[in-house]
Image 1 (cartoon, rainbow, N blue to C red):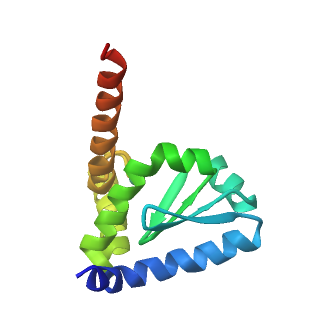
Image 2: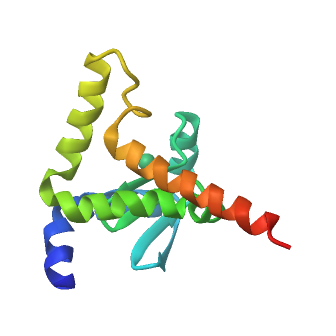
Length: 137
Ligand SMILES: [Zn+2]
């Protein structure tokens, strides 16, 4: 079953691998973490950060500003990994169309995108859990 999921996600992951090769050629570093190829740092990371993006998930590849930022964003980005596994080849068009649909309705293309809202909901749960842990004696 896992192999089928990997194959179903492969078109999106291949785009991520092409982006990873470009990032690595510009000084980024790579690591495997939690079943995903994580790419961080390098010149492209600064370009991305300057445009307000800390991380981006393309299938089983996550591109991020830094290793520590990837750790902070891991739960959010792994929601996108699961979305890519669910949507397969349709993930990127569905994501873009969902954002465009929100913009056409006068809403925010990113924050109101249902794919992002699902990921932010997981972030909120994580923050509540961490707050709960801190309050425990
Ligand atoms: Zn996101």
